[in-house]
Length: 403
Image (tube, rainbow, N blue to C red; front, top):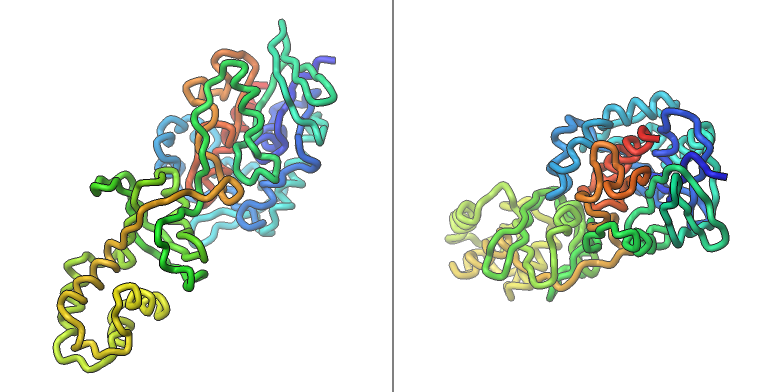
């Protein structure tokens, strides 16, 4: 039998491509794991952050250097179209204050069940525990070889994901199969991942977060590589939170993180504020800092310890040099990056199938007619907040429309 379509990968992109087919087909979805949509069920902490609200034009800046390249993908099936798709299937969506879009039920399971049902209605059967180990182009079809079976299909959509959260089946093992076809694979590395630094000082503050800080990634000599403002989280071992995750694609060992804990205030303004309240002040150092600065008490205590200042001493007893050191650590706290967290902590994978090998108006491989790509398997990684799922759905929809 030669199937109309084989979709390789039963995650968000694979299932959405099957769910959005324009016509019924005779096809298969091959999934290497024992169940479908494992990573989808994890998205948005199980609530499924489907996309982000707002104008689709504003999305482009959330995909790093690839944003402009994927404009046509996002524009042809945007966030409004996605919400309309799910509404037609009986799933209403809600928008949080931060712009993130979720199913009204806040249940990723509802989304998964919907997509699986649509796939079945469109003529697709699921074959689980079927790891694909080879693809060959024959005359008018492709042969897809699994460990125990070979299937044939006129067209193929590859939606095997990247390397992040490998226990879900997204472990990167399919990239060598694509490489054997001569398809270019850009270097893979974790993205949306916590960052480790040398001499991390905040282990005792695990769980404390800041609503907004300014973060810069720089070279040793201070050349700016990236800048972003968002919330920051201290963990027991490293920096995390959206401001770290969304800039981690630019991070690398040997580069530096510089954090401004008071993004609304320049170094000069903070120095002036601290000096203004300095002379003759008999209050304790920690008390004054709490009164002047909207920062957690425990954080300020650690800052004082780092600078060898007693938080109980009178504010008037600290020196002008101490005030300058306080200003510097609060406005340009700098750390040398030692490593990024591994794929089991990374939300997405940077790198993948080179966009230069793909027709981004159809998602078809330029060298192999009838072979399409969707989702994280491509060299696209977005910020947190629904941008990665939106690209997965947009690219899957375009691929499906070519079947």
